[in-house]
Length: 202
Image (cartoon, rainbow, N blue to C red):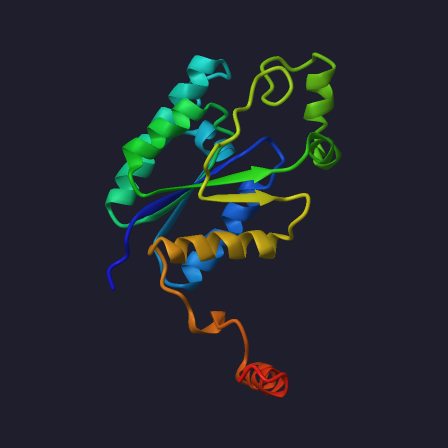
């Protein structure tokens, strides 16, 4: 079966788990034999968008360029994983329209969790007014209204979040379900059947 190109777009505040999940998904897709490219905020800003700053206009341009690359890769049968804060709904909507096969994953965690996780102390600096235009503190973040997948990294393990994304990709027809994903082993099924029979349901 020929691989169908698609883009999984991870959006959420800094520290919400976008990159960690994208890395896990990349492993899983490669294990299934797919062609995968990962576009990450930090990596992209070292090359493709190093001339851009963090004003709204520059952030929009950053996402515009990433969208163009993701569209080309998707069109050529590649699974593209994009991890960007991408705070504005209208910009994400344009990316969805441009790319076509677009799966939005909203990575959420409460602000207090993000501050606890922040080893560089960026949130504390932003709260103290030392970092201007910091998304979630001095700059707005507009959460997706209807993402294909929403994960709460303060409540779910990475495995649980990854399983939700993989399940959605299978539902949408971008991935084939694997045999190992049967809900129960044969022994467990036999036990359940025996219990149901004992209760008079079978």
